[in-house]
Image (cartoon, rainbow, N blue to C red; front, side, top):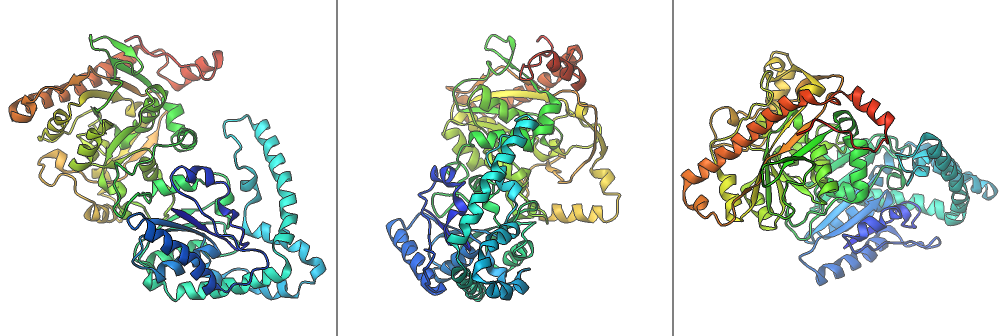
Length: 577
């Protein structure tokens, strides 16, 4: 169950833009405080607490989510502090626990002195302080529209907001506003005095342009004060974060791995497929540049060995294990996942480095970052148990045996495989009769110039200390491996963009393991299959490196001219396989 708690206005409208998405995963209930209600803070706490305890008694093994916006954040924290044994997940949007340090404290005495006749102007003042009207008006405006249409819809949205502002004077009359300010003061004091007792899992969402509360600083304070707290910061948003464009609460919940159906999170069974809106946002906003600049061309191999354009050669039913080469910084991931969703209507579940799922990887900015999108689109920590679960559910699984060593390779190591000696993924595939599809991908050298690798960075003072600290805290994936593949040093390589070339993918001939029990019984047979898969990946890479020289549209300039002469959505051809 997800129970939103209200903001300062008491209407509970903060989630009006999110009900539809949240309703697909949660039973949503909302707290509404009538305009003339004067229930003190502790009374509101007991009211919500009663519902929470009743729900817990009905389903004791399921988590209960409390979404608290501003004042509601104080309410959620108070309930959590009084119920440490109930499995609660708190999502706090610009919580008012920092009310005592509000930038508006000097104005509150003035609000009390405002004559009743002038109170109708107060909502306009508060609206300019609490949120960004532009971002509110841009909600549901399609980003792919031509500029003129976007401007027209934005103008209409801004005009439509005005009547709502005048209605606020009726929703929050003067005596109610003054009561709300007193309620906020008591709520902040109550919640802050009990932070030490909060055992719940907490996600704090903070805004960088909150003109009402110092939400950015408060989020970091709560992160230090609470036992289990994660922060996501949105630097361009105002106090009314959940009412502004570009914010999807369900996406944030999934990206921060807060969604679970029981006390223990399961990365496989708790996964919720991405929505159409999430796919569109990923393609346009997250990987938009790489997507448009790389102009990915994909090929696959049929059962008879014929190479064809598209993914027709990839099996239509799982379990399927895609095994391939990891390009620099995983640049190939976005286009690959997108193409499988569009062409095969299939979600590829990638096995990712566990550090992506640890708090040490989040960075000081705490912004919603690429690693969060990896989780939204099905990424799971690379472990034997996760591979077991995925294959047992007939999933399409993406595995890079070279892992971080390939994705963060050094100069001169482009398209070189760094695979371990262990062939366990082959045996796991055989256990479930999965089809192994080896694939190669090239193009990193066509889109970026490698300037600084690990060896270069370690010669730079301060930078080398930061890299050492990051690797000291990083999670080890292959403690038992030896050689180059065991040396998975994490760092951010220095690259310079080029005039983009193109990414090319080749999925090799599917390798069936169903009915081949000898792979499980004989390690030598498993080793031979492992070497065959590795050899296929290397052959695919060599094929692409040679054939891309025949592509008349390898350059982004040529592809742009082609699209100018044809429909923009028209697929740009590549070489003939």
